[in-house]
Length: 443
Image (cartoon, rainbow, N blue to C red; front, side):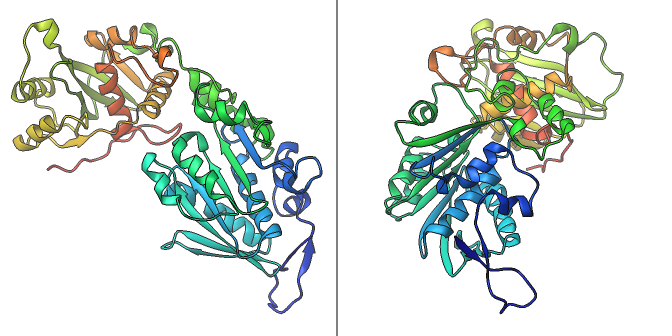
């Protein structure tokens, strides 16, 4: 048993003994599901305590994160004193926001003493006369492995492990060399050839790991209305992954929800409240610029500039493309021109003229595609019949099944890219949110 200080106004009051199992959390929080209780107690039950790791995957909002972090801290405190542990996420910022802040709040409610050192990137967690240090790490890219290299750990918790590079995860695993150390993994599904799915989930027994698959029904704190709202937030392959919790491949059309009947505006609104432009710039490849206008909660692609040097038989300079941009805008006051971040010379060209605010686009492809899918599903994006190249690309833009991952084929994607830049870089407000018209500073 772990002796946890009983929280009272009198700091000298003697400790109260808790058996550190599901009932502790039941006394402090809402009720837990069977799978959540298993996560909370697996490391001390006869059936699972000899496992070296636990893997929790499945749907969003299924209650994986809080349970894994609470159980990880309780296990560490019950089994070690003066040990070092790692809490890992995609970035240190996401680790603190999604894991550390709610975890420390919950632990304090249970009587733990928690002191976070933000500048040092760690927190000290104490109870029953034992204290351990938990370091925060971000596994953003291949270079992140060096950040965790060299430290000796008693255990590691890796949240959203499917978003981390393999080199970082394997380095974190290698750091857990203390006797009786354990590993904790949680994630939402990705594509079925993802290395973590192939090497850990499919080989869980071989790795001596307990594998638990979660759905939203495994989180009793969610009401039926909230579950239904989350089911409406996603479509296509993202619905299968984030709602059904399946490791499925992205295949076929990237935007199967696009429909000429639903998304082509035969008659455009008479006026618009705001305008913006998005640009995918190319020299050998086509350049695609879209003019967008907002009417109420809907953004319309009013017109476009699409220039293919192969189709036209000659290429254009930055200045010639800028002339096309000016003609597209046609004297309108635009909130900003969102440009392909790799088009440095064209961005500089726009800035040099000083007519329009310019913003380098965000270029997270899969996240951008998901957000565009959401906007199309909710009919927050509409298109003029005059945008012929955009409508053509919708019917041709497909996933590259041969590459075994979430990668669209790099053909017929230029209008699709500029649409994605528009949605993700300036006007999309979070999961399930609406569009916002933000200001962009002139250079």
